[in-house]
Image 1 (cartoon, rainbow, N blue to C red):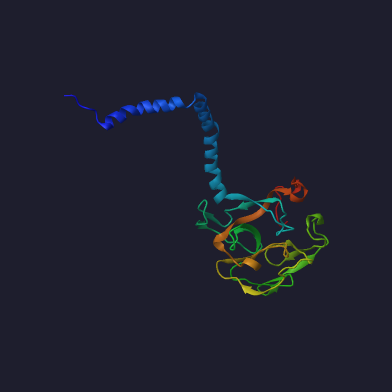
Image 2: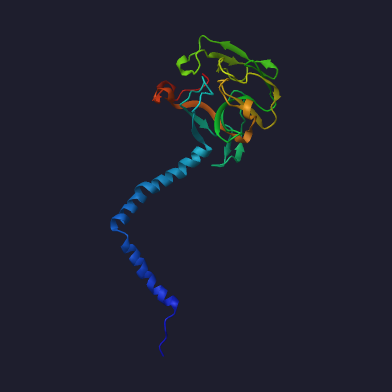
Length: 257
């Protein structure tokens, strides 16, 4: 008696033929070029990304600065190096800390995520947990002591980099690390705020261009967990106002000198 083969037997017999047809339908040049692309481009780039991206996320990164809120210390077009190991070690691509060995101190320049919209910003630490800070007519007081200001001449900055005709540049001292700040008298700005005690786990940030900075005076205090790392050096600098010509003198320069 003849037996009909079942459906499974017929399908198993067709599988090799279908696979052969599929291979035959792909041109040889396409198969050859696909192997070349995988071997010479896709695989090396994938390996590079697997190494570089976690490194950038957890160890060191760079930050393009598009605005002048940190003038005269940092200029528009500066690309600054972010040391992500300055304070802690985070899980790559997250803000979860694996270990912590330090905290930001007054006058550190840091990169952090804005509590308002999550954008990455570069500002200076003005107040750390426990500090009582106050701003009155552009003069900062920390823990009841007014900081000292030495107004130019003598500052090393060319006025062509400023938006206003008569900026006032001064050396601020007495906080943590002496540095230059700038005020723009022609602008409307928040030049005073009432005494404030910075609570635990929070930081008060301000830009060095005091009248041209959207900072903690407007969006409030920054959580410790939102601080990405510390900035102390310019990698490269491109002049936005002159067709992005490199500012060679700023490459690899230290900030706050």
